[in-house]
Length: 172
Ligand SMILES: CC(C)(COP(=O)(O)OP(=O)(O)OC[C@H]1O[C@@H](n2cnc3c(N)ncnc32)[C@H](O)[C@@H]1OP(=O)(O)O)[C@@H](O)C(=O)NCCC(=O)NCCS
Image 1 (tube, rainbow, N blue to C red):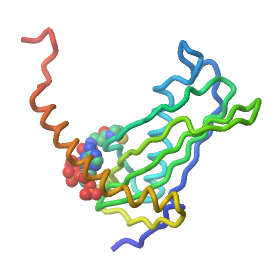
Image 2 (image 1 turned 90 degrees about the vertical axis):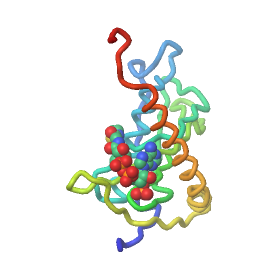
Image 3 (image 1 turned 45 degrees about the vertical axis):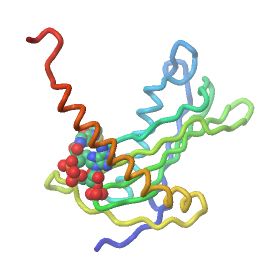
């Protein structure tokens, strides 16, 4: 039995200055770039919790609530909200601070699931997680329901993949 850990022990932050090379044709942060930041900070959080290599098993959703402009600090905060046997749910909050005015807002939120991998390349057990703050408790309480929905969706994805096959359009 692994020793439980506090949510705060997996808290991980990542911050970046949004500059023109990071932007799309609307002069706001490119969505794919933000998705990479989210996956990266969440992976670090999962590894910090499990002290194992962790792979992204799924991303429930990424809700882009506001565009992020140039000369903004994009600040991401990730922590493990819930664990099962080998999997960990990680929540990521994306905040933007206008560096010229100081105005801050939450621009995106996301839930991801990571699986800890053992040295044999197979999923391995992770410590359970103990929430402390009201925000952590709120997210922890909703996690079991999200996990059930994920499990249904995973079965659907597998069924769809079997139906679709892997033939390329020009192959007979
Ligand atoms: C994720 C992965 C390791 C699961 O392996 P598997 O052989 O299907 O393992 P299992 O069915 O025993 O599932 C292991 C755990 O993963 C969870 N899991 C697997 N797929 C999942 C999904 N799509 N969403 C959420 N959880 C998932 C299971 O619920 C289980 O959790 P638990 O042990 O806490 O109950 C495997 O599918 C994989 O390697 N996928 C590719 C990962 C990848 O390349 N990511 C991108 C780069 S890091």
